[in-house]
Length: 383
Ligand SMILES: Nc1nc2c(ncn2[C@@H]2O[C@H](COP(=O)(O)OP(=O)(O)OP(=O)(O)O)[C@@H](O)[C@H]2O)c(=O)[nH]1
Ligand SMILES: [Mg+2]
Image (cartoon, rainbow, N blue to C red; front, side, top):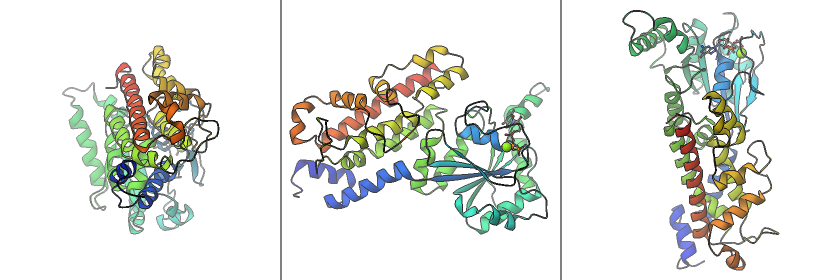
């Protein structure tokens, strides 16, 4: 194919590859990574430290939500238990029992827990990190896996201190941090995060996510970033950027150059990719009905549930899937709307929708979803 063809050269330029074949391969790999890479997060720590609560918080669930990990009950299980992310089935959280008795040492523990399965480990303590936590961290390090210390229930510590004379939140946090480091002095440069699973906007939750993002290999970052709750504009912007970077690949994968007509549609491209792309954004930005319902409950604003008037969000909401499913049959309403975004698409159908046109459509749609999410954050007071 000649690079003089303006469509091909636009695709090559977007991909940074010299040939259309290479560009398509790169695009397919990128989309596959965006949609299908799995992430396994292990959460461990002594009984009652807040493992289940942390797992729920990172999944954006309250403890009484359907599918939430049970909290406040002492489970004496010695088996790892997995929890799927509610909308991103490729992200799994594992509730691992604490190491337990000193006899049941870290090495044997990791063997039993099949540590290879996990991308990283979160070690939780609600007071002091104990000898077992340190033993475990050392064994994980030997196996060249990532691990992070989370000091949970920080909201309780703050509450206990705030009525004292001369209370200074930063000073209290710094004291807890230093205390954690002292307990962990056998570990080189331990990464400690102070967290409240009751309120992920406060304290170090976002810092933890940022650190994980910079430590994880790039393809795993996408899975993590898609799955974390939108707790601030900063997180939303990161999500938007990630999807923006993939628009060229989605446009190319939709087969616009080697046009593959979808039966019954007047658009000569594999629209499933486009619908899947927007469906991902929709869930990842927290625009789905369930997320809206939860947000409106959390900030006590019932009107938020029906707040979003974006046509694309409404079209995505008509899809009946409860969560992301890449193989889902392309939603009719979404397609109708997408087609309406591009003037003259109906009449151009025979010739196929161009790469440039599909790319514009993806960027416009993403922009619309970003604005809906920003408006929502503002209305919820989470700006
Ligand atoms: N205030 C506050 N309470 C928390 C936090 N995390 C956990 N809790 C509470 O601490 C108790 C124990 O939390 P869980 O999440 O069940 O702890 P766990 O580590 O899963 O406990 P086991 O499964 O028994 O080992 C529950 O009553 C939680 O509500 C937190 O960040 N802040
Ligand atoms: Mg638990």
